[in-house]
Length: 125
Image 1 (tube, rainbow, N blue to C red):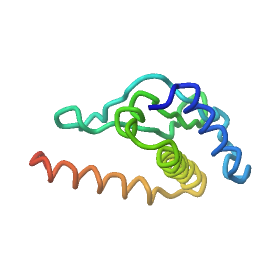
Image 2 (image 1 turned 90 degrees about the horizontal axis):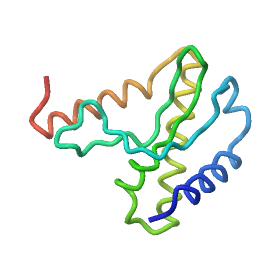
Image 3 (image 1 turned 135 degrees about the vertical axis):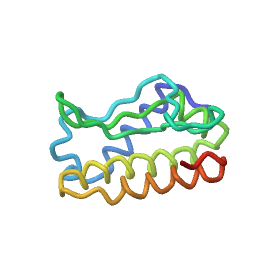
Image 4 (image 1 turned 90 degrees about the vertical axis):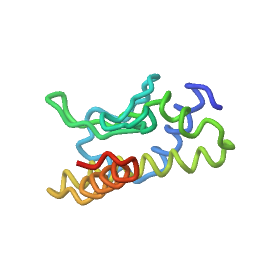
């Protein structure tokens, strides 16, 4: 398990390695919060939000949840955790860029994955 500070350093390194153009209009930046965040459709407290793209009156931002990351990936080797952080950041940056492009293909895929999760839990609507 890595510390909050180590996680933040890893995210900074990953974000700095990506082309700056991908962050256009991401005026709220990228932040790491200490909490664990459950998905609202979680069944049995087993579905966590690791990161999310947020659009609101203050602007556009990407937020990571350290508690959720540790809950899901805390047992991974450092190099494997790093790979998961890359995957999560790429996912959230894609949400941002799809929003700028006026589409939401990834949002639709996320919705399908939640529906599949609920079917597997026997909770599909």
